[in-house]
Image 1 (cartoon, rainbow, N blue to C red):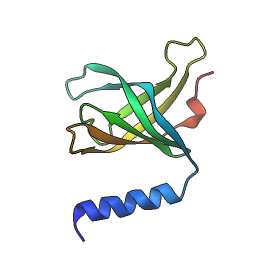
Image 2: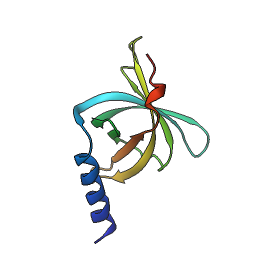
Image 3: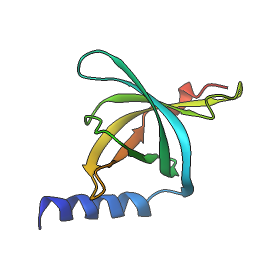
Image 4: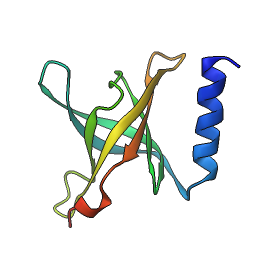
Length: 111
């Protein structure tokens, strides 16, 4: 079994184990610190959301194990923040990256 087959099998198992919400490419904000200690912030499409994490579509790779803050409806005073860690970034045929993020601390969800 190739590495990509292993990743796909693992991803399929993840999908079966959690309740999921199809986000229909809803835009969210994501914030992280890159390898040069610079804060990065992007508005990106959320493809999938579950109790355990998110799958997003990003124009750049984000290194595995990078801590991220996910902000839903950032322009709204009632925006919600979640905290997570990047599991993987897989380059797609279109040049963008499918980034899987595991939620790490739901107790920190802001009001």
